[in-house]
Image 1 (cartoon, helix red, strand yellow):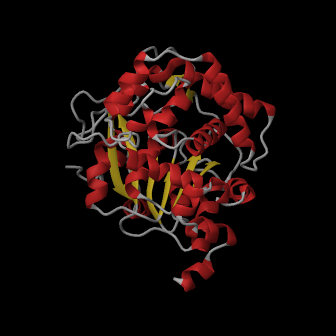
Image 2 (cartoon, rainbow, N blue to C red; image 1 turned 90 degrees about the horizontal axis):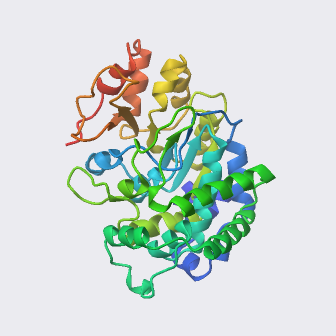
Length: 377
């Protein structure tokens, strides 16, 4: 243990050894704000553009990999992932030592700062959702710890927005974010506030939207995401029970969920992450990439992505979690499609992807998504 700790930077000596009990007693004892900011700045690269507002996931199939991840004993290590809070469901099960949220959009990093502030100011699921949606708490909120997710959804569905609470929460949120040590522009703060207003205004009707064309109600609402189940019929979202919520809260309290701006096929971020993980002696357990590889394929930058993957420390259980969509973009229906789901969640070991590319690669995105995909049932 001591030999391992000697390998860690001062930052992660703090991150990995602060006891949860101490954090629960005094949130101000969490690591210094500049440690968090330094890692964000060190690992980030210049932001790029993506033509959608990914405030929530559009993948109802996101929980379909949960059972397989458990059977493969994908746990601990370091979790990497794109997008908004979908990763929290995977993190709550995998329980990594560190999670790095990597997205080409700076807005994604800013949204994770919003999530972080709300988690740090909340003690429970009901308090967190009350702050996120700017709806007042139920009078007996202290008795809600064991309530099923359906009860929480029903409560916020019938409870109207409190504009005064929204303004109060936004003010407190911005004060908390200011303590994280990051240099944020006025436009950054405005973006965070716009994201918060989307959740507080639309509540459980918040949806993924594409900027260049109307999407209407095509994509699932946040309500649907929260109430989705895994392949065994269980609610597995990180807000489905208090224990999973607390995994995420405690990691945020300890600065162990770190959002960075990065292009999966870019020149800096992924390689900087690889260097950083070697410094702290950790390996990647899971890398959630959504369907980013589809766009990399169209841009002919898959080889750069695979070369970046080679820079990451992995083992034979390190997996990619990717998504495939059965609609206009793709020509074939994925064989692992579950009835009534447009999206398909796929697992592949990272080393098999690298070996396939070294041996000549794939002929199409469909082949990439099917050739080495692990059976989930």
